Length: 279
Length: 166
Image (tube, rainbow over all chains, first blue to last red; front, top):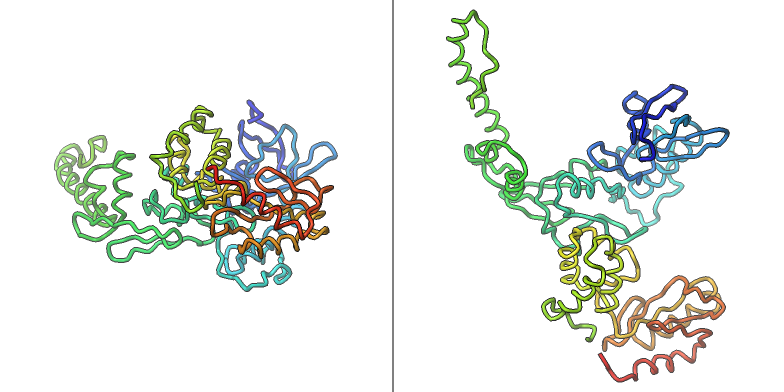
């Protein structure tokens, strides 16, 4: 935000150029420089909550650690992504996350990569079922992309957790599953049982709509309603399951091709692709 | 209003609206609105928060986040008087633990609980900021410093005996 012009700086000694407002993480990703992240998703606002993306920034003879997902570089910043100081902090972050969620494979892999020795911070009460690292991706996707604001935080410190307002079943939840999709640690789940979708963690139950062709229950009815309101998809397509949608599209396409082919042959085997496909 | 009573949103709309008007329904004033409502109703009833969500155009998930983040906000009905036993370092050393136990015994509630008659809610706080008065206990907005163990009963009676003016 502080820069109106592109910024010249360096990452690991390589000269880099950041667009105005672009973060160090974004520039690094563009240039295939690996920086681990858990709470970052390019479709969502970054909040720097997992602390895994820390990098060391030096200017003059000073340096400090910053979270690269929210840090926009200054002119002539020297960024290092893999110094001993960076690795030490990342190792501690991973150690803390593993103490909370020992059975999450993403964390186990990071622990192995950064040489975290298990045991030092193991929780006494033998929890091990916890999978949520409170990165907030689910809350952000529900707020920013889906726009339902169905889930949020509760409490603070060690008591903080992700839940629905008042721990009630989420009236605002449409069972879209965006939170499940975006969760980096598989802490959230949904299950389709007969004609309902159940979001286990939020106790939501939404009715699944039937495909108008094959009768399969394929998506929550409230989700389809929302899509109808927000997106400009073909009316017929919204009420079909993915398989039937593909098939009807293929059928339309093929009918169109059949119609075009004789003309095409007459025109010297060239299909006129500018004609609208199937309407 | 006694502790067990639930807030009927229809009956309390004027009180609620007065607070919302005070801050001209600016979304950024959420915390101030919640503070005033917490004072007004002595807790934040769910229907009130739902109304605030609509009035300020702030999603309920964010309001619930704020309301559960700050310790000053209560989501459950509180007693007529709130007793905060300071358990900061100085008060701890000067015997806050014993005072807490004594109060729990006299009020027959556990920490964070509200007495059956809805008179008192007993809470512990980390530091009231008046360490020179340790051990200190705050009842509503009054601080009682250098509290002796045998003074707790008299302290309670001073508040409990007041005629119910609610």
